[in-house]
Length: 212
Ligand code: MN3
View (cartoon, rainbow, N blue to C red):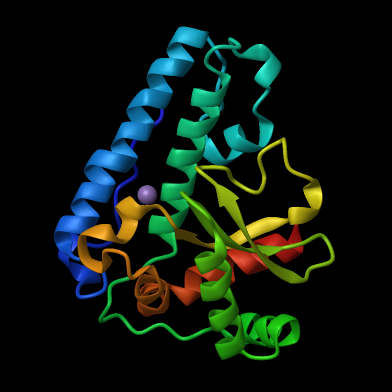
């Protein structure tokens, strides 16, 4: 049985970027809903899911799942894994976070500057059509690349080529992530997101990815 992970911060600590109402709704309704649905589907399917949701999404064997539930299992598993990832790389608005130098150098190498990376990430997110997630990944050549995925797809799901690499940063592009405050102004949400990024966590994920 998968469980909703505890958040590292209180609902109101992401304000004014994300309001307490937005975070509570996102976490206790949307994310919790994916966890509950995933557990129901896995129990029904009698599928032997590993304890770690990140392992599950990398090793999902669609052929061992009931055909009628495969898409829903994949969707809800991604919904759980992606939200766990997203909460993990955020930090309270008033908590300072600077980019550790090794990651900063890698960003400069791949995108010429941190500012250019951020602008490009916002534009990549803006070009995505419909619901999905934007990702910064470390590819097998240890280069940083960005991409978006549809719905709750995760770059390490089995249907994707291995060269998408390991994600180290993500942004929820679903309307439920921003609509209560930003309405149709999603670029404002993308720009504001940087105020909440826990760069130390992203850098830890970067280190793990390049050592893998
Ligand atoms: Mn969401």
